[in-house]
Image (cartoon, rainbow, N blue to C red; front, side, top):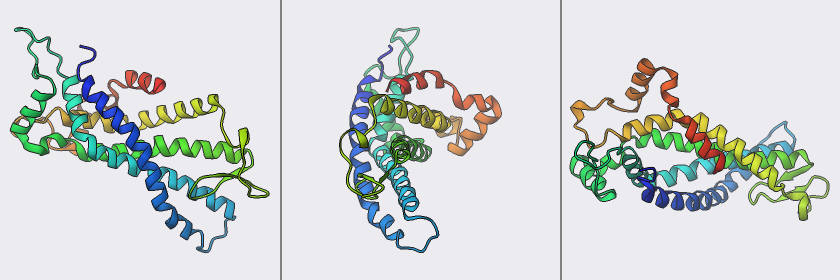
Length: 255
C-alpha cells in the first residue's frame, strides 16, 4: 500500500530530473544573448554588479521555464500517480479500490468521463506553482553558488557561467572555482526546503483539483482553482493549505 502509484512516480521522476536540467541549460543559452544585449543599456551601476544581476536573472528565469515545460509534458503521469496514491481501499468487499487495475483503470475511467481534458485537471495552478518552484529550486541553487563564489572575489560571466578572476579575468581552475561537497549539500537543502515550503499551498490546491477528475460536474466541490482556494481558506484556514507538509519536507531534505 505504501508503494501504490510508484510506477508512474518512477516514470515521472526519471523524466523530470533529466528534462529539467537539460532544458534549463537550453533556456539559459537561449536567453543569454538578450541579457547580454541589456548590458549595453545606460546604467549607473558598476559592470560587475550588472553582470551578476543578469546571471541571477538568467538562473531563475531558465529554471522556471524548464519547470513549466516539463510539467506540461509530464502532467498526465503526475495526475495518474496522484489518483493511485489516493486510492486507499484494500481491494476487499468492505473496502473496495476505485482502480484495482492500476494505471490502466485510472486512464480508462478518466478518459470516458472527461476525455483528454480530465488528465489536466488543476493544470493551470500546477503550471504557476511549478514555474515558481523550479525558479526557486533550480535557479535558486545556481544563485546561491554564484553568491558564494562572488563573495570569494570571483565573478560569473554571463552566458556560459564560467568563474573568472576579478583582477585578470582569467578562467580559474582547481578548487578555487568550485564549492566543497558540504557547501553544495547545504545550499541544495536550503533551496529545496525553502522552495517546497513556499510552493506547498499551490501544490495542495493542485492535488484537490486532480481528485475531482471523473466526478460529475454538478457534485464537484470546486469550480476551479480560485474557488478551491477560497473554500479551503474559509473552511480550514491557512493550515488547510499545509496539510501533509511534514512528510514533504522530510522527502525534500533527503532528495
